[in-house]
Length: 403
Image (tube, rainbow, N blue to C red; front, side, top):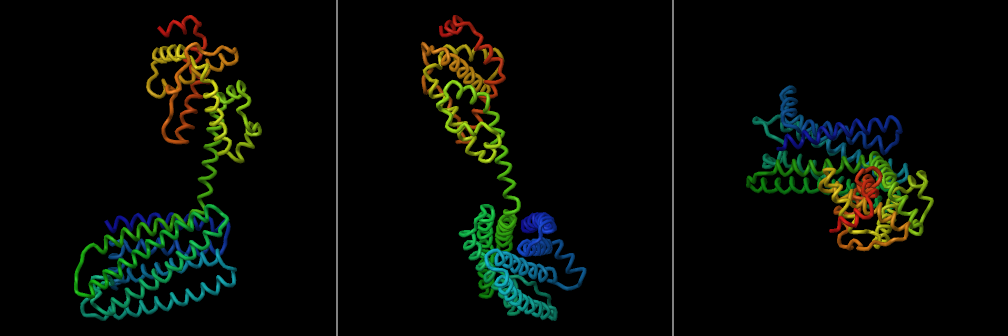
């Protein structure tokens, strides 16, 4: 399981690294450069953490644990680069640079000590692994504690603090969301560190509990994917907003045939005629679509005295003859009801037997379900031959269909 999770993280890391490198080449900036370094280090580090890759590196060099040491160095680089990015976002350039340099010197010194401890283990008569299972050895314990305290506790606490603080004052919505997601990811990294330290202490005490590697892999994967998502969110998040706006505009246009006839019959329902213009609707597509949905529904309520059960029966019979079933049948019948009710409203002839209010369809799925349903009804209203046939049915036939 651990190898599969690390492979997933490696693939995501290389993809994110390539994506951010393209952005850096087009619009270079210190924060983006820092995050490119972080993603490159992450992708390389997680790749080296995949067991077959680590074994290949160790065997090729003849140095056991080399892949793990390099992977840990990559982890320290990730933390330093992510914090460098946050410092440049939240502080003036000179102060951010000064603080980043201090953290880089601190990280470099910690990694130098880790390398020295690793070199010391190479002289052991029996090879050891730099994992908690070998924490009874004081050198391995020191190595892991330096890595955990430096790479996770110190950095991730500061990263979480900076993310939440800057998110409160940030004016860019997608950057604010990304910072909060990054903070949650850093929180999972702290859990990873706590898990490692806890197992280390238990092994030092002489116990041999199982499951550390699996728990660590799950926590690293969650942390990595959240931080990758959060740190790239300012770049790709606005694309989602554009896509959603275009989807809203398409739905707004799709509802036009039914809406146009409803507000023509009941002009008092239209609160903002500027939303008739596509460019105006595009500027606030969510509001424009909401208004259009509300005005159609208000029109349906106003037309209730004109919704005739005879029309419902006739439309149902014609829909059955056309082979319609399920929601297609229901939407077509509702469209025929509205078409006939609008005609009756213009003629000033209320229904002899009005449709009961409880018979009106109430779609599920909240607002999105409402939009989808009215779009289906509008398509039938504008294009269904059943609606045309219902409108063409003689009054006597419509009346007779009640019996």
